[in-house]
Image (tube, rainbow over all chains, first blue to last red; front, side):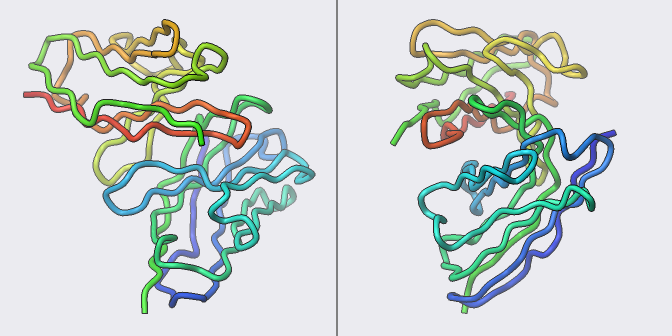
Length: 120
Length: 106
């Protein structure tokens, strides 16, 4: 059974940093692209970043470029999102999602999400 | 930037057919995907590559494509189908989601 479990969310002040983690199990982690998708309170879904199987390619939505860094550790079956210079508009539930495809991406399994709140 | 347009809400009675549309200029060239999200839960993939259904998704869920519009059809709607539904596709910048449609089962 595919399982994705996020952790690391919490309350952080504007300008602060946070590192999210996603522990994967039930599939060959190193064979899949992985992504982070977020959802602001009461709003829709927004893709944030994705990373290739070996970590050699990483892509970001424009609003987080230069502030967020996606990474992975295939030996630990883990995905990460380092978030720096956080802003109020980054407040959201962040989902880890297994990603299918190299040109047309979609998300076939999702974690339960971790809430990030950016507020003073 | 690329946009996918969905109606904010759709309402149907139990047993009827619900149709949720998603429009986007690139849809003739890119596949569309559909996710169901119930309150407080993570999204679940219900349709991929316009019309394919993942294992475990009921047969009443189907997808179709025509030009710049894709449609999620739920036949014989049940109370448990009440949820938000999001379409998703991609452009050169990455994956893009529609704004979501709230399906209400009357």
